[in-house]
Amino acid sequence: MFLQLKEVGKTFATEEKEFQVFSDINLDITENQFVSILGPSGCGKSTLLSMVAGLENASEGNIILEGKTIKKPGPDRGMVFQQPSLFPWLNVRDNITFPLKGKMSKQEANDRADHFLKMVQLSRFKENYIFELSGGMQQRVAIARALAMDPKVLLMDEPFGALDEQTRHIMHDELMKIWQETQKTILFVTHSIQEAIKLSDRIVVMGTRPGRIIKDITVDIERPRKRGNLEAIQLEKEIMDLLEVEINKVLKEELSQ
Amino acid sequence: MKWNIIIKRILFLVVVIGIWQLIFELKFFPEITFPSPLKVFTALYEGFASGEFLIALGASFKHLFSGLSLAILIGTVIGVIFGKSKQADETAGMYLIAMQSIPSIVWVPLAIMLFGFTEFSVVFVIVLGGTFVMAMNVRSAIHNVPPQLVRAARTMGTKGWPLFYRVEVPASIPYFMSGLRLAWAFSWRALMAGELLSNGPGLGYTLSYAQDYARMDQVIGIIIIIGVIGAVVDHFVFSKLEKTVMRRWGMQ
Image (cartoon, rainbow over all chains, first blue to last red):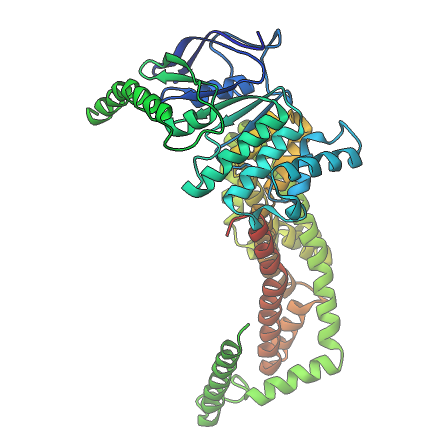
């Protein structure tokens, strides 16, 4: 198996009490798969992704990528955050070559940056600084930066969550193209059911209180997926019903406080 | 800048000088304590023409340059230590605020007793005036590095020393710039305090010299020079730098 999560759990400990985000998460992901992790806020989906990235340690269990247990961050896993998190003191191209420094010659790094900038259609902007780009453009640079490291897995934490509706749809189509072109394994965290259905081969639905996987759905709808597709609508309704119980749980808890 | 703003500012100056002239004409005060605007400008002109003010300015800038450079250097080192080490910050961070709140003129008697009426005393006072405000700003610069950028860098395999100089250092430049601007402002004040009580040369010394000879026209003239230089350097150097950086760093 390519990427394996074995009985993974996370507990945050404060001085007064311990808080278990989730436990006993088991997941097997094959290569080139596009997997979405979908769930209401508080289910720990972003935490789970951070653990795959190695930014957070697992309290229980193991995360294994190609036979190796993940303990810390590394360039074999590229991550795209909700905030583009680009370095404002570097121009677009230097942002993309940032992780390549010391690993290859400057020329090679620049060529690679140019290649991925072309892929995200930002070749014209390689000399620009970050503050000169729109939110959608910044997020495309972040994707190019993650891809330039040639990671085995691309981790995306609600990458289009801060974008407006129209831009988000454009980004979906571009991400599909990039995925088909690079054949990367993508782990994509989102709270949008439509987004998950539009993009994924497989949707892992998480519940909350306690965080856990409630359903693992294979999406078998022909690509490119158009809006208004009947199968998609049917699936959306199905997931919505699943999540309603979970969202009500959160609401109840919040209102009772 | 727009023309109407420039015109407004010039008009304001004209009005102020007009009122000054008016009070002078009404002879409320004896001429020796209240010179006319013309007399002050003549003193300014003569001071520059004779080279006296230029020599004093040169000496002052020499003091300022040494003092400010040292203050920036020492302040940055202290700030980085307090910014990076929680232990150091908890132990001595409080005293930084105490040191910063001491007006720089307070250090003058101490400097004179330690080092006598020397130029080194002046530099010493400038260093004490600028170091602590620089240190405090560098400390907040490091505390304010966006954690998101550090996380992103870590996912790219950057850690340890490269994480510090490739991410944390450039990410703290905006606050560092504010630190520079404040260190300059504090040092400029400290410079005048130190020089006023020194044996010269320097603009502050020229000022106290003018006081000794009851040359109110020169006193006012030098005060004008000090104000103008303070404003010009802040506006054309530090404020501009800070704005450019803030814009590039997406903080505006």
